[in-house]
Image (cartoon, rainbow, N blue to C red; front, side, top):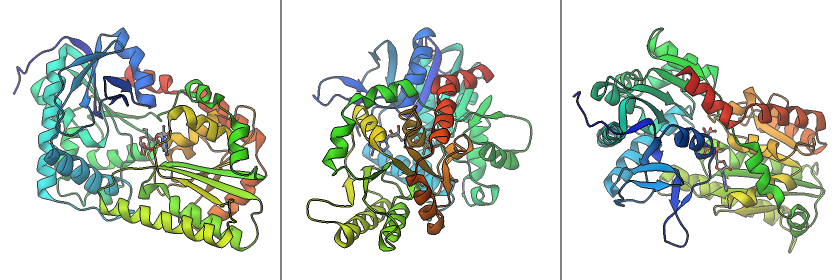
Length: 434
Ligand code: ADQ
């Protein structure tokens, strides 16, 4: 299938979502919050680059357009694609499998076929954008077949792939009925990047040495940008929740991998035992993948626990848990991070977890404390956190109790870590290796 259309761009990023959302006014587009755009925008502008991805609304057909100097190439997904490729194979087969079966994956041939078709369309769109000899950087688990298709269609390209989520142990991966097709698809790239050395080892155990080359490139954030958002009124927020001695915070997509229920249960047990006094917990949980059963189940469990804990331990006008199930504006997140004495990041499994790094970046002065699951990729770099095992509630309780007293030196060390290893450095090191 060589001879596919050749475009005019020297650098092409391909990801499931374009880095823009429809403006809230309904007119035009606005940058979607996220470090990936911030990290790649300068490279894209400097190298006449473009971005291929889905604009985020089903059936939306949009012509390529320029957004702040970046050429965006929309790929249309219809409602069948959304159901089978996105909700189905990507998020009901691959997502649970790659997160070590926290819920059981479903494997359906119809989903797989949609995944293959949609991946082919993304590859075609990338080909149409890429000039001869261009560099194409494909992102994440939704697009693992794209490198293989690109290699077939356009042997002239240099192809990179980065996996944002964990790569499972070989024995788990082998469950996948289309395991050969996935590894063959990935093997189409020149360089594959992982968040942790363990993910890379899991992949190597399947494909052996040789091609493609691989590496570990832990993703990061732009700490300055997160802190700029922290300018709002921290004292006001604390006053709004009754000026507790300890303000605890959780910030997640509402996803079963994130261990939101487990941290609520740990807090509940501490309250039961009278070990946590004058503490308030704010949980921000942005809605996610809401049509999938396991997500609905997780939401029910979380909301039941919030209600129960407030019923048992709250007072009129003074709940113990404040729970927001709506997206919170990025600028406002910094205020929450800055105000929180203890940040609870307790995923069962997480590729990296940028929330942990965002929190640390709002505490350069050593204030605050981070409770962090040892199963988050971030635990490799943020070693000074209060590490815990979310499968063992006692370990979460202990970590919370220790965190209540603060950890100035640990916070300062982690701040330096994040500052010295920001998202620019991540992108630059991957692209240099490529
Ligand atoms: P996610 O699973 O989405 O990302 P995470 O890394 O924490 O998880 O990134 C979430 C982003 O969304 C953060 O920038 C955060 O600020 C924002 N966010 C989360 N909850 C929010 C809320 N309630 N309101 C507003 N904003 C919220 C996947 C992988 C991760 C990996 C990243 C990047 O699962 O392991 O770190 O990609 O590679």
